[in-house]
Length: 409
Image 1: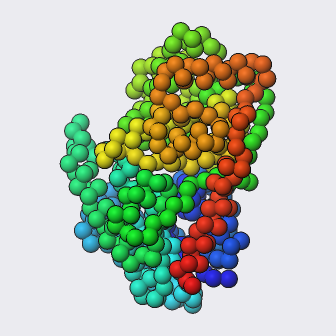
Image 2: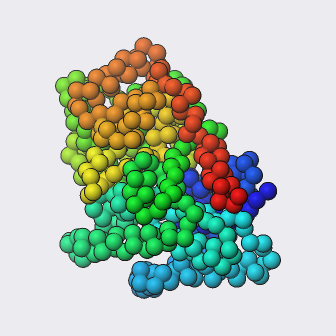
Image 3: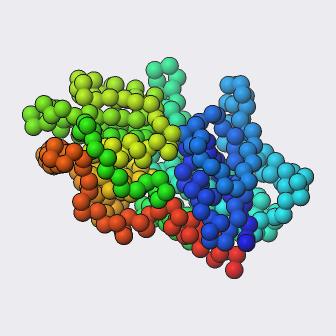
């Protein structure tokens, strides 16, 4: 069995489904993974994930605020964090007599740890692949950061844009020595093809062991959203709220439930229609293994997309949440209809509606409310099961293994 060293910015218990399920299924296709990642926070959304391979966590983040700021500045100027990560990995493998891998796979969000992969591949004389699940360019202005940069009430957009430009520059520079780049949508591939000649798509997906059709009786008609908003420019539920306030829907006894983080909750409470409707509720985010039961109990699964505003973003986002919803084969509502790839996949699956029209949204909710009244549950009755199965995490791992095989032939 061949060995692959996976370098990643996040790994469970942090929310990192793409790399988590890849390591779970990769052995089935002839590759033994070993993971090096940064030790970050105490996120517990994947706390119950059974880790299937050796995982080594490196402390790279200073505890004190001013030290973090200094480390961030050094990373932007000289990639200090990347250099420290590479040195730590080299020393650990030498100290413990670990053999060099047959290939390296680097899985990243903005750009870390691409430089580390480049350094180790050059040192060991092995080929490497870069997997970019998110790109700075996909976000609306400044939303690639966890929070806006502010000086008092003033948002420093010029600094956010400067950071974006630097992240893109460092990312593209690291690509030069990669044998291939992997990403998650047609839009992402089109963008990255401008800086690398070999770009493949491996979509985000769903774990077939967790997400599968289930139709328990529903005592309440529920519209359910799980995930983060990031910003209202990225994900805005206003279209749904306007439909719920319509004459046709305002008297229907339903519940709209957002399972989300604190920052997204603040954004929701900033919307007058959300505050005014007592049927709208906010709940804390739940661990990943509880999400399937939430979706099974939903009458409609709500997905919030983006308007694909061109170069200013947001663009090209085909979320894991889409594929998890498809796997449940429940009525799914994607707002707005960007006519982008996520909308096309949803419509092709037969599981729901992508729309930006108030009348269509009202009719969709009424249709499935009537179904719920008659049946006690709802289902996507025209779902294309064969089409949906191609997005399973096991199939995704097979695609990764195929690309690793190619660069080691």
